[in-house]
Length: 333
Image (cartoon, rainbow, N blue to C red):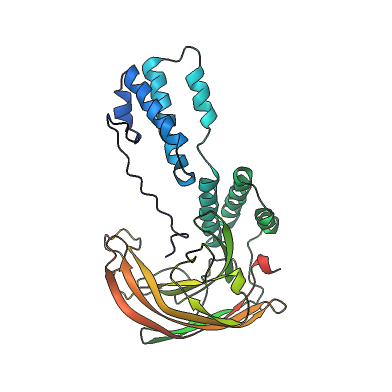
């Protein structure tokens, strides 16, 4: 899916006599350093932290924390200066890591059950407050906090509805619906572009297994940015932002055919992702008075192995899709 929903940071670092970046040695390797080597490790870790970007800050900060601890062990710290420097690093969190933590807490909150709702809601609230502390806020995050009620699990009022239909690879589905564990039938996803600017997306999902994934799950996800919350016909993409960092509608599909192809290492986690092409969708009604969104969609898709990029299944077609969902999320109150 989007590089903005799933962020993977690959840091290839090394240690050498040519002043190359310090990697952060294993505990046994650090413990084996003599005092002079420990000082050099701290110097290199400090230089890396000075040159760190926002996504790499936490990694290099933790490296420096480890190096300082082992310099104290190897050299001592009679005047307490090393411990003061270590204390000043704190938890090595920054706005980037706080934002990721909030997104993870939000995802867990959206998938909470009545039994887990209170804890996961409070975790989400704490993550939002910590993000405000590290990143500041234009009022958006505080508005989310104000809308949270972590004491009572939200229940659909009988009027809320979620019905999606689609023909997926020649198989007709006339009642795809939202996950039963999600408190509301639609959700609001907050997704960052590469400049860490957050945008609101309306997430509409329809699945044939509302109680959870199975070996035959078919689940469609439509992510619609706020600028598109109006009647019209739009392109449905595989990525969440265009080349200018502006939000665009995107979609995905979980497609399991009962063969187990999606879990190549048998660990229970999916090892594939979907790639959408030739996609489009139309919003035929977006009504904030009756709180309903309706529309149609279609797209081609392939299922791709995450580790190799090779096609696992497809290409297939998702045809004649429709959706009729209540806008029951607190955002629309």
